Image (tube, rainbow, N blue to C red):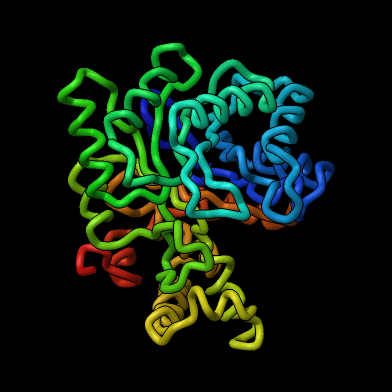
Length: 320
């Protein structure tokens, strides 16, 4: 799998997402999936304090699984480890948890469960625009100074807040945010089941294009929207998939995917991921899987390179 620069690190262009570990996916299968990801050349594992808690609250179950796996495999030094904190309670998504005490508490719990003394990047999982951005940046700076995080980033923030945060950092001698993690996929997500999340829009895309800030893309496969549509038609779409992604505009892209498939021989799923890695800034799709063969299929996507014309033929972000 290809790698590209992420800060001072060389990181797999496709990261492995662990949101379902300890929830929908038991530990034994989760370990098999991570082993398979490493076997295809991957080194970017993305987790979060809240992952694994969506089905039955278990208090950091995904991080615990990742931590035990790294310890047993002895591979921590080969992993670009990414985790997130500051997520609201699952039962109260509009309750802020971005005060310094909550964020520091999440970091401490994450390090304990991951069985490590640092992460390569630490993200804030949500924003609270009622809080001054300066206080948030001061909290994150503490992780950089004590070595528990090598970089910091944010997820589900508006681009205006990201710019404000980095302007504060520049004015106060702090380290700026290194990356952003929005929902980003070839299919436009037009309805979010959780309205505290944010997707890539034109303004956010222009911020990345102007600054070169890396983008880690969650729900990068749009829950296999195009693969399902190609293989089984509308009947293959779940109710939630219809709500979140199905639209005439997204369906029209499938015809373009088919044309690019004729040119490249790539699968539908690989084309959707390669479109992300072809952006004019470092983009790292985060892909989850529930079967080993799905992980192995990421090898093709991780090596695929689309031309600019193929990328823009599929969907032009600079026009949005």
